[in-house]
Length: 55
Image 1: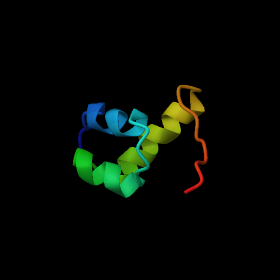
Image 2 (image 1 turned 45 degrees about the vertical axis):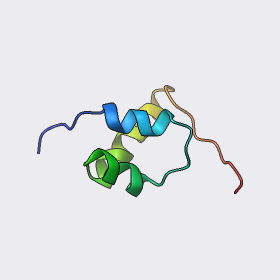
Image 3 (image 1 turned 30 degrees about the horizontal axis):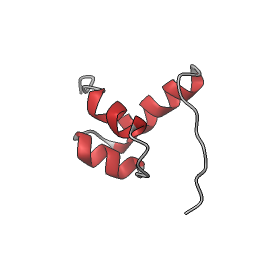
Image 4 (image 1 turned 180 degrees about the horizontal axis):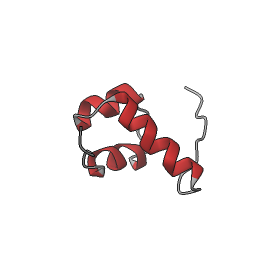
């Protein structure tokens, strides 16, 4: 499996919309594991943070 384009995933992650990793993966036509890997990499490099937004 090759590296998928990250653009659709990044757009979903920075949109500010509350989305599950599954929804992001489906919209970007990638696996949940690929979304998690990208998010993990961004967080570990301090390029992204995770925040909790109450419903």
